[in-house]
Image (tube, rainbow, N blue to C red):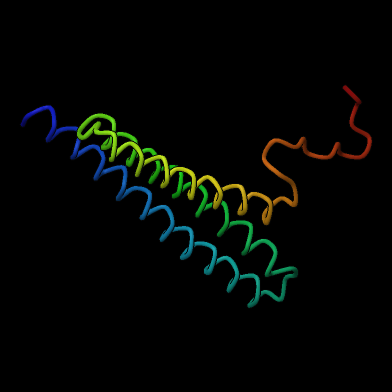
Length: 120
């Protein structure tokens, strides 16, 4: 195999990993929600949404990594880099939006201190 073929293969494997992470997250979150419903545990929706959101975030990170690898290593033209920049901007916006939905704060904001925790 040539260098380009290896890089393309690596990008495809990482792409597939991102899709698998999202799919597995949907399945696992759904199974966990059903188990909570059967056991009549509450809450169900919040944990389901957080787990699913984290799975989507991880999948997006892998998809961005695959795009970067393939664009920079295989076709580093001005047009392909511009398209990659657009894709990264869109996925970054999605990641920030998901983080805000999951945690209730932006990624750059500190987590609230736990009650009784020492102050820094």
